[in-house]
Amino acid sequence: MSLAAEAALLEGRLRLLQEAIDTVDTRIKAVSDTLRLLHRASSASDQGQSSENHCGSCGHEDADGLTDGTYWEAAKR
Image 1 (tube, one colour):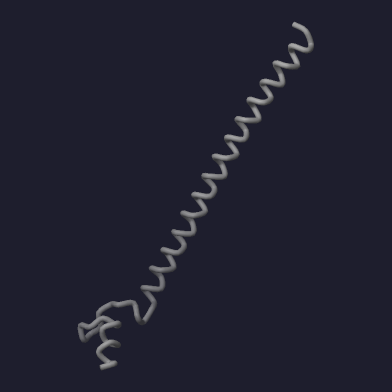
Image 2 (tube, rainbow, N blue to C red):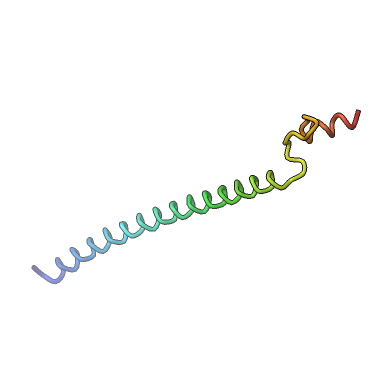
């Protein structure tokens, strides 16, 4: 096999490997973006639950049987 033929073969393999690397890079970026979104959604969900558990106007029923929002609406009248 001539050196020119070997060089052409190696260049073809190099192109295939570069395309495979680009594909892997794209998949890594997509998975990273998905994980970032899931982490943000999870953090937001955790903060929402935390604020519901500690917020004075979270809509839970009080001793009078009214929710906090209903109490304030009734108090306006």
